[in-house]
Image (cartoon, rainbow, N blue to C red; front, side, top):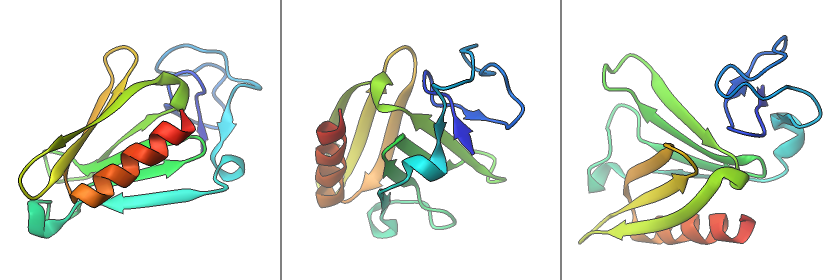
Length: 132
């Protein structure tokens, strides 16, 4: 699977332009198999209010941050991928026993990952800030 280097959207093998932002596909496309030299995966905690059927996931790789969550119709999963060039800030909304991670991107893209443990939220924030 290839991703657009400008907006992080998934690309098909025959695409010449990104279907989301229109950027020309070429040497600026990041190949997920070549870019995945490391991968950190964090899962929301069911005991802290996470979804029982499919907990939310935050996956941090060299190509960017991917957030996977069960959609509101409970049919499939929604996936948002942000490349590091498009991330403007990362912050933690800490609650009494859990935390939400808010990853703001340039433009209208924002990831709000809910119901993660406070220690996982701090690790996610540190990893992303190191790669920015």
